Image (tube, rainbow, N blue to C red):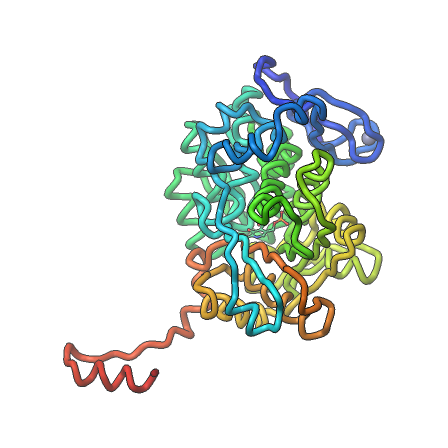
Length: 419
Ligand SMILES: Cc1ncc(COP(=O)(O)O)c(C=O)c1O
Ligand SMILES: [Zn+2]
């Protein structure tokens, strides 16, 4: 799927040198295009390495703004244009001593992207794609979404003052729609799965002057997510952890994390040999399954509590599998029961309330420590990418509470029953 439009403003400063085909290497101008016209393979942004090398150092980064734009030489957007947005990033890398002790690990850290402007990591890829839609002279932006991206795109569109259209599968958790609505997006609920919504969005992208962040703007979109890898390495004193565990839906995030690590190494900003592991819910695990079977078979009807990860036909599945393989990571697929249990484990041990996508990561951490894949002396970073308050429905029935009158004795009795 590809489309093209002229770049209206060619004077915009970025060190991105073009879009390049991941298969045949053909170069294209920075434009509204996501696939090679020769071999139809996806495109990626590459940079003028010597220009980046001159501007990017540990000092320039640490003197930069407290958001993703501190890494602007490796992003495809003019820094001043980027800074007009919601400025996600530089989220905490939380030391999780209680969890580490409980699991018998030397060191566990959570990269806590639940505290981004719209409470998920999706603010990052949106930050590097919405400004380009404006630069390309498009009339609106949008996305196909499992929920988080809809909110993130809508919020960014509001900030930049451009209309937003989101396509989501029908029946999504209402809280996620509420956010997109509050930010003023036009919401289209599509009967069917995320993949149906995505297919329709591809057709819309070809017919209208709209920048769909994860479709026709996809090469720019993935660039935002790699800042997660940049920040983790920086926050660890420019050293890689032994392992990262990343949740996978389309596989774009994991692929971007791999690209981020490669770019840091190229510029001498990172040392170590981090392995990158991926996890998906058992009810929708086409990428994880492909690492065993060698074949990526789409899942027709995903069934999982981790709705954000319910992408049956993952656009970046092959790339993600490649990164896992080449870095010696594992691919996993915990059950919904394990996911919810791990969500509560993280909340109760560390005070971090993640949505089920985060529970999926912690569930895999636990499983792989138990089966010996992760050894006790590893430093592991878990990417917790969305906030639990966004997806409360499946936990509401389990709320533990005591109803008492406004009477001290009744309160004390209730306290004694839980303490
Ligand atoms: C909270 C959360 N984590 C992880 C992902 C997976 O990202 P990707 O689709 O890039 O693999 C998503 C995707 O929607 C998400 O919403
Ligand atoms: Zn090509």
